[in-house]
Length: 311
Image 1 (cartoon, rainbow, N blue to C red):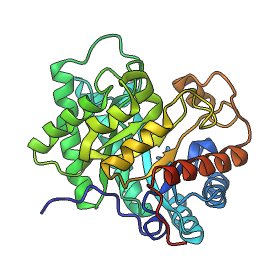
Image 2: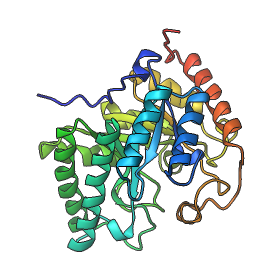
Image 3: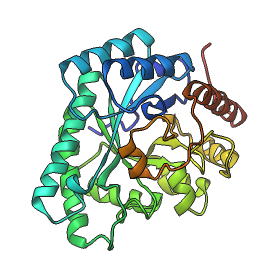
């Protein structure tokens, strides 16, 4: 039986055709109890329907129980994300590093399942780093093989795996929607049917002919979007063609989430700041930023006829 690539949201599906989400990194730098409460309650107060939670470094039973309780109390859905690093790269021929990456991916699936999330996305196919050389046939093959095994375990847990392609400075393997679609096709030839394509508008703005072209190249595999401004600051204040993107999404019949992502060195950890090059402080108030983003996205959905609500 074919696997349904659409992420099954229990709560968001009742309120809108296209769920709006927000990345927890706008609120907090870790997932300690106080941070989890701030991020989840703040996201709900801003009007969002789901929150994207990066996998905690060492999630325990207490973290899982609190997260589930907060999600239930606020009515939010959740998705999970991570980015492999050089010590856990599966885009490699090194068996030790690859095994470490496979363990991280499997742990992410377990965390997602434990908190009731059905999606693990992000840079799941390579390290998020500037490589000094192109991907090799051996490293690419290893990434495919690892992902096929991880996806098999994820399928048993009703979890989808997302491949978020990033710009050339953050991966040497997948930089465009077309490349990612071809990669997923190879996984499908190996019997994998629960991997979807994840577009991040910040990265697509660097690598694609247009955001609309990226949506077209992704086709029916597109299941998740990060909506992030060209400068990763307040959405709607940069150079991205939002009208063109939303028109393309409406034309394609897209019904997956739109998750707002922005990073500020005022919020993220120094390690994350350095990893993604968030050198400039474009904002300091997550409350104002998230409320503004929610209003902007609702306006774009309404203008493109993607917005359908029961309220």
